[in-house]
Image (cartoon, rainbow, N blue to C red):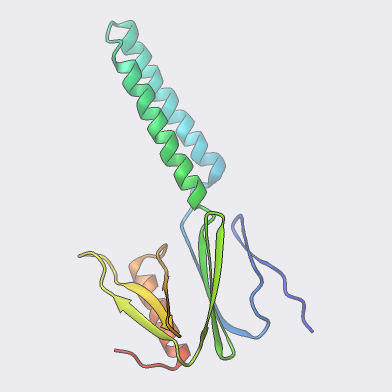
Amino acid sequence: PRRQRAMTVSSVVLPPVPADHEYCVVARLNDSLGRRNRWLVFGLLAATSLGLALAFAVAGAWMVLPYSALEMVLLACAFAWFERRTGDWQRVVIAGDRVVVDEALGRRCERREFNRYWLRVELEPAAPGQAPRVFLRGGGASWEFGRALPGPERLAIARELRRRTGRRQA
């Protein structure tokens, strides 16, 4: 028997895929800066903002300083929120007569298995000007896939899943 190893995507370690898989796709957010550079950018923004606020405070406009500090606190919260989301991922694996969907959001990991031949891949309209959302449905369960993907990629994966599951849906 073949040994399965965990799959690594960037700094995230995904659980191993079934040995007999024929299709696997992973969706995750684009983290183009990386942790170190993201916080370097934050430091540069903070230094610039607080430096300008100090210059205004010395010139007599001291009320600029608390607003600059508040701005940096809010920006730090936004950076920290994004930092927690960089490890989120979704994966769809087709193996034999099963479709296995794994998802990690924050510290919560979930797995759902669908019967390949009963699975429906459905598109639901999103907000105007955005690509439709992709749902995998079967056996009374529903799972949204591809939230982190751009619209065209999401639609391409939906077409491929439909093709591989053998179901023709409208």
